[in-house]
Amino acid sequence: MTNARVITITNLKGGSGKTSTAVPLACMAARTGKTVLLDLDPTGSAAQWHAAAGLEDLFACQRITDEQLAPTLHQLNLQGDVQYVVLDTPPVAKEVTLQSMGEADLVLFPTHVGSGDLAQLVQTLGLLRLPLKANPALKYMVVLNHAGTMPAVTRETRQIVEEYGASVALTEIPYRKTYIMAKGSRPTADWWHFEKLWHGLCCLN
Image (cartoon, rainbow, N blue to C red):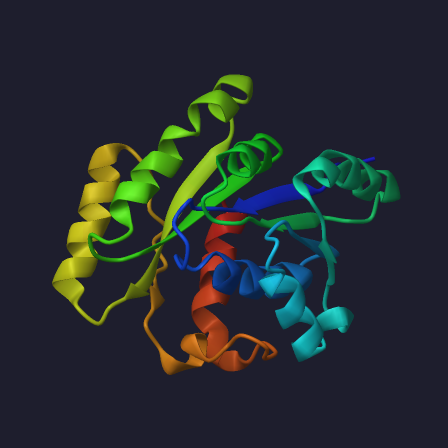
């Protein structure tokens, strides 16, 4: 039995783009193999998007609590056919963030460009110490959101994050109407930035 690859999408900052990253990536992962999205956010925004868009034919989505995370992952691995599990996490929840990173093979930190998200990104990255101690091979990466409208700001944000010591995904998610209005909709060919991001993440194995 091969364990599913767990991809945690997290950031202590609310509104940084966790759900708007988790759902499109789950859509892209589902093209490669059987995928399950676990929604740990009490607001259930990922599960609501999944239901509203009728994404059941692409991947499964379950709302769970942090207490249910470990047994749910164990049960999914017992099934033997799930290849990817995407975790969408709540904001301002250090214990859930720590737990979800501890279960992960890859952690992604969506972050809006500019200074607004950087302080809490640094705080979130600081929580990696325990998961990295338990799993030194854990991969993690920052994904720049709302990029491109001010190229200089995007470049400066990338530079600041890299100087802090974190890797930044080559593919940036731009500030586009397609993505701003995506919640509740199905993936289209216009979501090509997430497809490109997914292909880059697949190379991290």
